Image 1 (tube, one colour):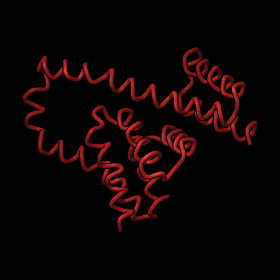
Image 2: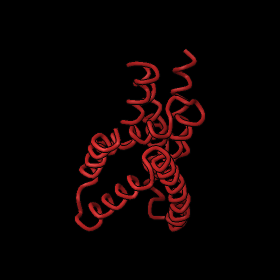
Image 3: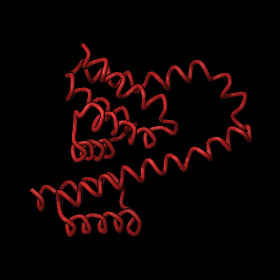
Length: 177
């Protein structure tokens, strides 16, 4: 029973403090899942993140479903998904009137602008951790090949990110297994 409570907390806390949606909650979820509860390693979390990015829909709920299932079966998946959705649901119900009243407020817009750098830093730290793990596991040459190929595919050729992720997974399966 404590495992389900831990699952709930691991996804509820990032949902409450992760202002900015899925990208903002990913580093917080990574902390809970990898460092605090040690349900996964950083490379495993990276694989779940890549898989979640390749599928349509909100990233946090897909990750919660997968991790919850791995930790606690079907009921674990239900608990984790519920914990991910409940903070937003409660906030929307309770704050909808305030949101509609102050949505164009300059103070609210400034607050949102000030939060964005913190989210960028959290995502940068997560990217660095994935790079360090990739470097240790695959080596510098394979890591550079994947970085350059992904960058070119995304920025120069405008390939959809899902295809880049599938390509990187295929590359890893063929050359790194």
